[in-house]
Amino acid sequence: MADEKLRYNDADLQEFRQLIQEKIDKAEKDLLLIKESFINDQNNGTDDTSPTFKAFEEGAETLSKEQNSILAGRQEKFVRDLKHALIRIQNKTYGICRVTGKLIPKERLRAVPHATLSIEAKNMQR
Image (cartoon, rainbow, N blue to C red; front, side, top):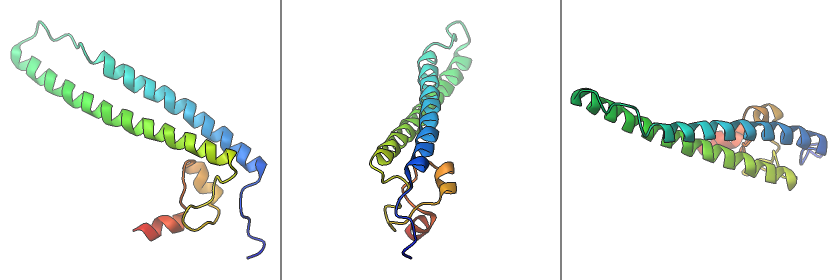
């Protein structure tokens, strides 16, 4: 047990910082697209169509707006979680499970870079 690492070294943290920053950049672009789509849905050009079609169109538009709103909320949370991961990197606490105190495997962090729980801790929550 004495040889078990307590935290990731600076080189590892730099690797994760770069990965997370790339994911933040992409996620913020995706969020912008979602928001632009939401704004552009305001006018779908059904003014001159039949009332029945317009009702269907407006129902679909409402559903689309709700879906966009849900997507935007999820994307904002994802960006926030990634930014919190950058803070943990800065504090050199990144990759440490908040339940077990053990290092989260690199493979998990590469797949879910904002993870704060090891698989072991996740399974204990069930």
